[in-house]
Image (cartoon, helix red, strand yellow):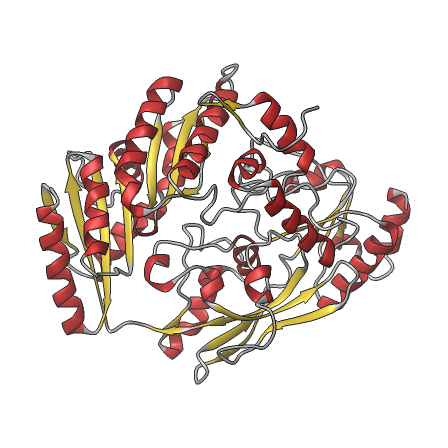
Length: 484
């Protein structure tokens, strides 16, 4: 179907303002938060109801037009980058909280609802939604499902996949699937986990039932300062080794501390090489005991100063600093490239040392800020896109960080997804047989490969070409794949 015919078909049931096709209208949708990569879509549609989405999908399925779903556009891996010959399907207008059930401890919401808005709506019932990405003030719950987002409290309370019960999903053909149950378990294969983190490649989520938790009676936060980032990394392992699972455990290096403090004025100690934030929540007696244990462990681990937040206002300020790390990077560098990899906690110190060495090798500064408790790294590589070759250097630096994560038994992504950013590293993470399984799953849901094509799972030929070019430590990658 030609572009004009497609527009005409959509205008049969969508208002004029819900179908965008002029270049100036499309420009805001050309990228997500990975703004180094941009592509205008053929057109954008902004449906208001599930019925409208079904009709959009049916038309695109019949005419074999690619569809890319988009939430708030806060993703950091290019997962919502449009297709040049496809439709960008915005879910922003499906932003209603449909039901709060304080007895079942659940909320039923549409995909465009902001993450933080769920906790705000549940607050009158003394409840909240646990996963709290740093972008929670803006990111949508549908996007959180697509990327399996976490946040500073994911160590104790889990990622999105651990905090949802049911999804209502549309296939590319416009068929409705009910996945999961509001009960604690459901029969059959665990398609709820499969759909979570699938990056919009298997279906379009139109409704989510999330778990709500009661607000803890007491919350306390410890800030520990270290004069060596490796010691801070060891301290994280020591806390977990002692059998303590903090509500949150976050780390920032010296460069990040200074950038954040200038921006937020959170009261951070500027003299140390690293800051570790460690939070405990629960019953008052339990929290008091746990905080005492944590302080002892941190002191033995080499902390030069330890401070417990005086009150709730100071605790929130400490967290505000951590969550402002990304915008703070934008104040100290013209551009930054945010990576996302995960490693076993025991290797944290060694990986940080290697990132520091890479920073020297590539002559690019790197702000290290991450979910230390679960080993999810978020190095922010600072560069200037106006300087020829700097973006390419930042990309190469980031690729090496992801390869190091794999070498230490980790993953190329913790919560930002693969998108277009990490396709090459997926060739290193998984074998050709494993990728064949991924493609078979994709084909079961979307045989024509119309939903978010070209994302998350690399084609075999891409990995073969990468292997032909990439020689690592004297050994060819993918020796089992025929060379072109």
